[in-house]
Amino acid sequence: MKTLKAEEADGQAYANLDDARRRVGAFIEDVYNADRLHSALGCQSPIAFEAALRKTAGPNRQPLTALSPN
Image 1 (cartoon, rainbow, N blue to C red):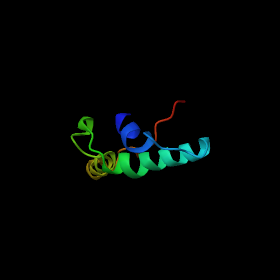
Image 2: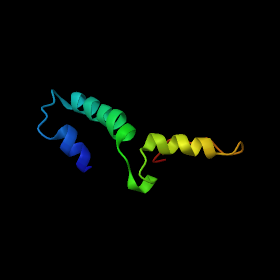
Image 3: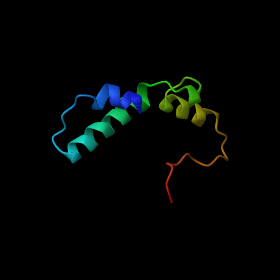
């Protein structure tokens, strides 16, 4: 992800692998998913898109679940 490289990882010195995972994960959750607009989602952030989807979901619709490789 270009945004991740440019805004978080470029030039950062992480203490160790766990520190890098923690900080990159926090960036993705706090900045990328919350603030970034995605053209594939109609120029909405993932959080705004999911909120709108939940509002329009009917009462018989299955709840959204996280994707799993299994």
